[in-house]
Length: 159
Image 1 (cartoon, rainbow, N blue to C red):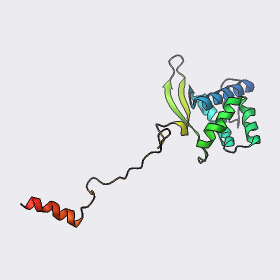
Image 2: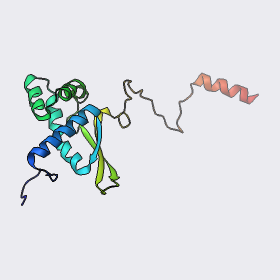
Image 3: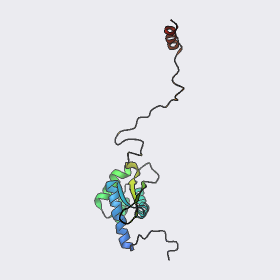
Image 4: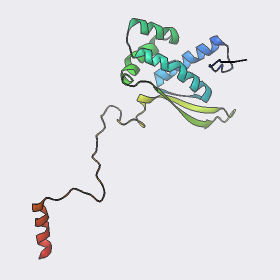
C-alpha cells in the first residue's frame, strides 16, 4: 500500500526512476521543451523546479548539489549560464505543462513540458528585443482638437 507516499512510481524501481528523471531534466534544460507522457511530465516538474531554484544562487555548493542530481556537466553549466539569469526574478513556476492529446500506439496521454521564460509565443517580449508598449485609446473618445485647429477646420466647411 502507498499510504502517504506522494511520488509517482511510473512503473519503475527507485534507481530506474532516478535515472529517468535525470535524463528528462537534462533534455529539458538542453532543448527548453520536450514531449513526454503526462505522468512523466508531472513527475519531472516536481524534480526539476527545485534544481532551477538552486541554480538561481550561483555558488560552488549549489553547483555541486545540482550536478549530483543531473550527473551531466554540460546541462549543469547550461542551467547556471542560460536558465538561471532568465528566471532570477520569478518566484517559482519555471515550467509549463501543455496537454497534447493521446498517443496513437497505446493511447497514453501526451504532454509538452517547457521552460516558461524561453517560449516567445506566450511571453510579452520577443526573442532578443524588448516589446514596444502601445498606448490604448477608446474608439469613440479620440484625441480632442485644440481651439485653433477646430476653428480652422470649421471655416472651410462654412464656405
